[in-house]
Length: 141
Image (cartoon, rainbow, N blue to C red; front, top):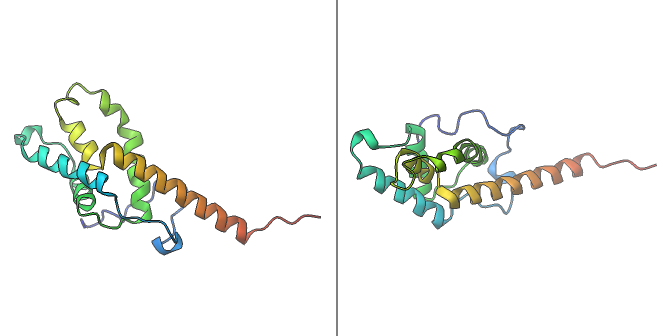
């Protein structure tokens, strides 16, 4: 893992809990996400240096996803944030020819990564909300 890759502040309004707090949730990317990252890295390698997309963080993320490493909850939030910021890239003129934006998008897991990260983030939110309700039950009179 790249130094500092998961040390950034979380994009989520509340700091996420450790993975073990979210019992039953898998933080291991599915094969479809790994396949998108693999495709991005392979297509990027075929490009001349001037046409290679992805930042150092994006490259590290692609390698994490390709290797199906278990991610931190904060990383899931960063993926959700990345996809929200970069959805516009799909309208770029080089999207269909696998330009830099498409390489980066797939490096973060592509459309399967977007769906997976969003689903995991929603489940984390639900677990946190349930824990909050259990810790602060309403008092009825």
